[in-house]
Each structure stands twice: as C-alpha cells, then as structure tokens.
Length: 330
Ligand code: NAD
Image (cartoon, rainbow, N blue to C red):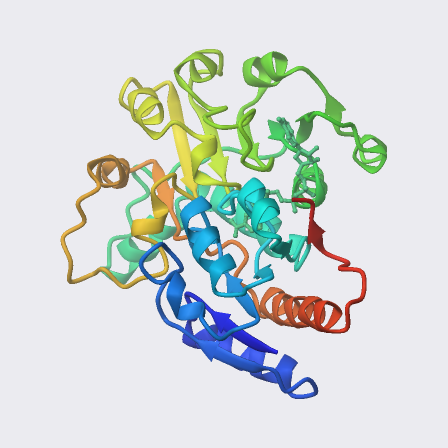
C-alpha cells in the first residue's frame, strides 16, 4: 500500500514509523496540506491520509478519484472537512479514528477551565519577573458551580466525570441521552435551560449544519452574565464575531478556545515571523480573559500512538478487503 500522508509533522512520523514496523507500507510524508492545488501529489498512491485542516472538498475529491484513490484515512475523529457525497460519487471510502484518547481532549478542556479561572499563565510570567502581587489573579471555587455540556459523547462524558470530581453540577444537552452520563449524575436539560443556568459552558458536539454557530448572538444573550465558554470541539461551533461582541460588553466573562473557525490558515504552523491577517483572531487575542491554544487538545503520547495504530489498521483492513471497522458512512 502506498500512502500519501498530507500535512505531515515531524512529531507524527515516529509514531507512524513504529506502527508501520510490522506492516511495511510505503508512507510518503508530505509537509503540505491537501487542497485543490496539492491533490495531484496523491498520484500513484493507493490511500490518502489527512488531518483536521486538510480540505477534501468536492473539487479535491474529484482529483483524488481521477488519480485512483479509493480510500481516505482521516487520522482524527471529526470528518467535517470531507465532502462525503462527493466521495460517494467517486467511489471513495472514508475511515477515521473515532476514539484515540477522549481523555486527552477532556483533560485539556479542564486545563483551559482551570487556567482561565486561576490565571496560572499570568501568575507564571509575573513570578518570573519578581512580581508577587495578587491583583487581578482572583478566581472562584469550581466546587458547586454549574457546568453545561453541549454534546455528551465520549469526550463530553469523561469531561463530565472529571468535573463531577470537582463537585460541579453538570447539565447536559444532547440529541441522544446516555445511560452512563445519567448514572454519574448528569442532568439532561433543554439547550435554553442549559444556557440560562450554566456558569461554564463546554462544547463537545460535532460540527454539523445543526451545530454550526450554535454559540451565536442569540444564544450568548441567553447565558448568565460572566459565563465561561470553552470550545475544544470545532471552531465553527462559535460565531467568533458574536463572541467578540459578548466579550466587549462583558457578558462573556471568560473564553477558552482550542479551535477556531478559520484555523486552517493559522494552526499547526510557526507564524511568529509573519503578519497574521485575520483581524477577528487578532481581536480575540487582545482580551485578557481569552485563552487560545492551537488545536492541541488531542496532543498526548497516548493519543498519537492510538492514532497511528488505528489508521494503519484501517489501511490493513482495506488492503485485505475486510469490513472497515472505522468507516464513515458516505
Ligand atoms: P462523539 O461522537 O462520541 O460525541 C458527540 C456527541 O455530540 C454525541 O453524544 C452526539 O449525540 C452529540 N451531538 C450530535 N449532534 C448534536 C447536536 N445537534 N446537539 C447536541 N449534541 C449533539 O464524539 P467525541 O469523540 O466526544 O468528540 C466530540 C467532538 O470533539 C468531535 O466531533 C470533534 O469535532 C472534537 N474533537 C476535538 C479534538 C481537539 O483536539 N480539539 C480532538 C478530538 C475531537
């Protein structure tokens, strides 16, 4: 099997090389993203392996189809960047890694909550400069606070368990109720009630037409004043311009983002010497109560190991014409 591996990063290679030791696939690491300009680089490969910000839209899928690609292996859980109906037309199957480590994302979610609340990032810099003043560093007890989770799947459930450990009340809004979530004391409520009641709102649903901009001007206005919003799901769950308005009028008290709607032009690259032209993103960075990480919630050794193993196992199943365990229905 020849695999065109788009958006390859040095830190991924060692995990994929380890997983490939017994399989001997030909992995062609390309350090550029998949898009309409690069899709022809897949020529000669059997499989295209992509990540969250590779763009597999209808035009790209057509080029991949013309080049004989019959499998797209996403080395991530979300598949909102793949045009599934175009895949169906081209006869391309799609696999993903549905659960590589829900702990990685859940724990990062809690890291964002704790950092925003207790301001450890600011304290770190202050103390380094010999400034031991506590002004501006006051937080609140998480114990007794109400956290609203939008989406209680694998990641949402683990996040809820951790927050229960802190003594939080956890509310859940989901299109399907989960038995285990109920057992640990998650209270399912309507979206409206969740928005009205929560001190912290955390997003763990997939990006779909129904959840696109689920956090918008209208839903923000229904939240408690001073609410903390955390997004480790997908950027477009939040209308960033509406969030900026909410931050400016101080309705939103804190915001922690690991994802951003236009992140494809920014994240995973070192742009420290470049001029960033995204004014919305730059405005978000100016708020002292906004904390942004560059889509790193998944990024643990355990997750990387599982991503590599599951992806190559899917390619093995495809090669052997076995049922594809992690197939995305196209
Ligand atoms: P999952 O499929 O196990 O859970 C998603 C949950 O969202 C399900 O319970 C589902 O019923 C619910 N849901 C679907 N549509 C909804 C709607 N309209 N309203 C409310 N709830 C809805 O997925 P997961 O593994 O828990 O991952 C959740 C999301 O996290 C992924 O879709 C992905 O976008 C994101 N993610 C981010 C990172 C990161 O590094 N930041 C890593 C992995 C996943």
